[in-house]
Length: 293
Image 1 (tube, rainbow, N blue to C red):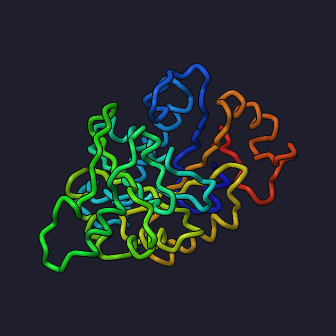
Image 2: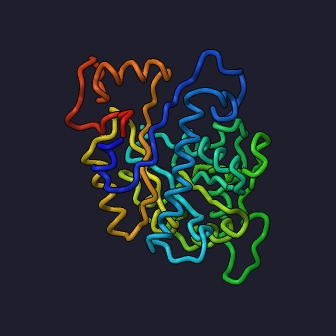
């Protein structure tokens, strides 16, 4: 965690333990719902709490001009690589935020490969891409219709949470996401919820994610322990800062097979990630979160 904070120079929100426990109930949905007593679920709740605190801090320091905390309402969560799969992370954090009493809309803007609906067991249906495509067809001044409004899919386990699935995989994700239609849609969703959380394609690979980041109130950056290189993290952060994007914080994703194995590996390696052959990789990868940070 300390290493990630130093590499990004932004608040460290915490370390996630992502695993599928064999004893977990056979239930579709994020781990904070399916196995709420697990260490993984608790790590999401801790990060969610720090996310809210960091959100308020942006205001207190004058980085977001506003009268109350409701100004920091649209947040983008993304990683540097495709392997930094943020759909699962965003799904769990959205549930946690909804459980604290906020009304939350979770948007799948990863239009190259939308997967958010899988996290909630939602069948493929109209979504963000469909609404944006329809908006490109209508004339200026034409009233908003159902066809140009994305589906808000309710989540039965979290009454205050709604999902906007990605929808159809479009031929032109870049054009759709950087258009004025996307900016307008974000504003419309913001009027319907306390928090709009958007998950997007990797920041290092897709220019539209960088541009989308400039249209939200703040960005949460995900780094994967043992995978995400320091140089890439720095490149992403520098790019975001050049666009005057507000950095809410960073998250370190352990992505271990189990919480116990994660702890064991951390003790054996002093908190550093390991290569596929078993040796410690202290040069390129962001080190794993240390318990003392």
